[in-house]
Image (cartoon, rainbow, N blue to C red; front, side, top):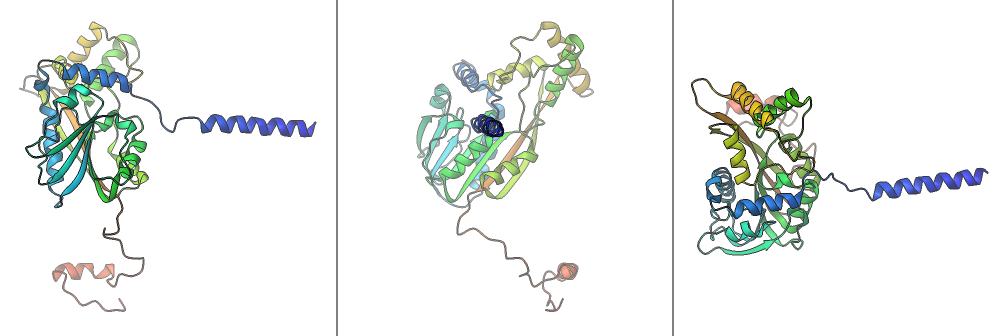
Length: 332
């Protein structure tokens, strides 16, 4: 009987282990197919250029960070390029060959580059990157990775595709993005329906980006944020522009319909809570997270071993006072 119980216990453990081992390492929050369709509809709209103002600005700022790195990149890739908000600023003197990828074939077709820049376009999902290992000198991405379900896996694939001492530069929306719209819809729905639904997709917090990059194996990280506050006549113009940017909600648990009374109440709450005195319209905040990470390489600066410094911390004040020129006693 004891042998039978032991066998049953071992079988139960094996079944439980198999169940855990087949579970995905991440949670699917976003409907990638729905996001692709949203981007296709936005790209095929006759007035698609009217909604480029935000992504154009962020793409220009991100391209400027590429120029800050004083080297020529032989092979680079723009992951989730949308309508080419970075490629139109990248110079041929900086990047020799640029590969553009996106899930939307229509947006990919509309992406343009600067004169002389060699480009190759590839329809590819950011969650299923297929670049060869150690094949790229630079990977860039602007306002696309916040829709990726498996962000750690995406970072790991990007690092694998980079050559040693290759660099990854990206921007994505941060957690404070559209907090005015989110809270207004939640308050209105709580008042009207007695509960809330996720009308605004969740965004990555800046405190998590560093740990995710470290987990993927990147070094010499640089992470900073910027806030762009844009004014709109009302909440409805903001929501219309988000649809034109293909930044409308794509979460699996998004509600299929929002009642008219809830939207009108949310618009009134938005104006009451966030409009500025003596100003028309309402503001909308977009928090942009910029990140730079390097793949480890033999030529990168390395920290000294512990115990090797020959300057004591107690002498720092004297060093600063004498512009760093001080003879430090070996016994200090």
